Length: 165
Image (tube, rainbow, N blue to C red; front, side, top):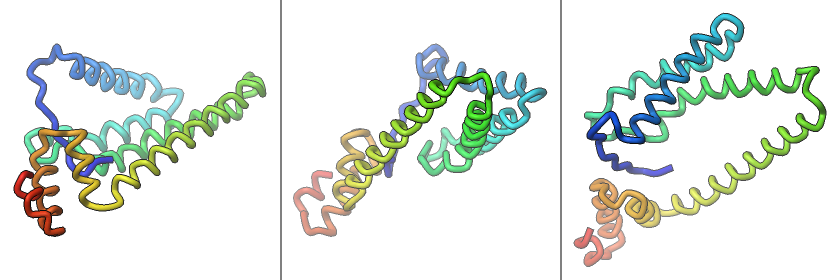
C-alpha cells in the first residue's frame, strides 16, 4: 500500500500491459456471462467486481488515478466468488481428502504471506518520513511524494533536506 502513485499513460493499445488488462477484463466479462445460468453466485460476484470498478475506470484524467481504497468495494465481489468456490470444493464428494488438505495448506501459506507483507508495510507507515521515502523509492517521478517528504522534513526542521525535495 502506498500513499501516492505515479502512472505514465499508455501510448498505444499494443503495449503489453494494455493488452493483458484488456484480456483479463474481457475474460471476466465472458466468465460472468457464461456462469450466469448455472453458477449465479459466481456471476453475481464478478458482476459486482466489474460494476463497482466502473466509477474509477474513467478517472484517468484525474490527479489520483488509482489507490488501494478504490479496490475496497470491488474486492467484495471477488471474495464472494472465492467463498463460493471454497464452499463448492469442500462440499464436493468427488474431491479426495488429500486434495482438500493441499488446498487448506495452500490457504494457510497465502495467509502467512499476507500477514508478513502487512507487517512489512506497517513498518514503512511507522512515520511520515519513512512513508514518503518509500513512495519515492517506488515512484521516483511522483511530485506529490517529493512535495510531502519536503513538508515532513520542514516540520522536523531539516531545512536543507526540505529544500532538496
